Image 1 (cartoon, rainbow, N blue to C red):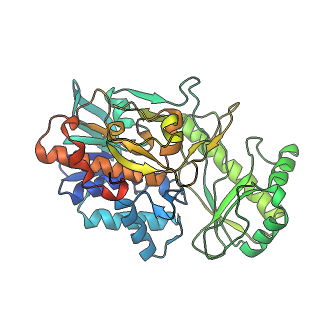
Image 2 (cartoon, rainbow, N blue to C red; image 1 turned 135 degrees about the vertical axis):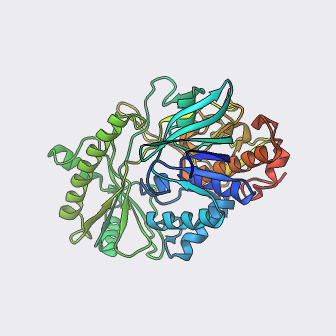
Length: 437
């Protein structure tokens, strides 16, 4: 790649939203580059080891298809997925295959330095790759960084955290254990149901992904004896597509801002100490874990919330709760408002009634005050409550895919402003993710 180069579309951030945006735009014939600051792809799916995919079906019918479905199919080919759970390495391998198939240019180890802006339009971005600066020009830019880096560095409007307090959701460092006697562990769970969350399905099927959350008494006693952080509340794991292994979404890191490098470093240290404390409890106290061992911790602490762009429409908590539908819908979802509370803040989990879903409008992808900047995934335009529902990976994939369509239409038609794109032009290409009316 030369020092300065021109693409139709720049996608910044190679999590599932950015990957979906890049693949879709490339499928439609656009010249696309996907930028990532890690040296591999996947974002929270791989660096954060976040699995499984959260609820995205009603009446056994997926609400998200398109690129998301292509990723799932590719992972199943590799035997890296059962039900909605998957291995991080399978996700990474699968998306590399798809991006290569559709001729997406990829630039990893890439840090965005400056946004070169003329009034309400991004002309180019300057990035650093191994200390070498490159200027990348494009017709359209898509922010899928999770932290709204393009909007933030470009001086476009954004919000952050709770609207009143500024608090951000808790962070979690995922980890994986092997050597678990899963049948024995599940027998103990069935015999001690009162020590676990009531939402659990205790009719376990060893051929499917199983979620276990609780061990309340063990955690309470460990806190009393100062063997574990008082920030811990329960142990939560899901079995992975391999006998004897499980992924743990358990650590609970409070009071830190993951968009700040110093605080993110602190979170990493706290998370790894919590992993040590939890694995000690499991191995020494919990039936089925006597011979278990730590396989790996995620490369990066899991981040739920930092900055969100302010778009032409802001998705609210009421939109989620009411199952709001829109004339310019580009995605559907059924995951409820899920907020992992900070210190002195209650957590929220508001499920939608069975069979209900809500939609996401195209306007929520368009960054306010910008003519050629779109956003998808975790930094989509939403209130904190709205974001608490939209942030999951299937929904992020759908919003990323829609951005890819919009950007491709802009580039092909030489539009000056993304708002020139009509909804009728977009919906033809995202039929699997919308309801036909």
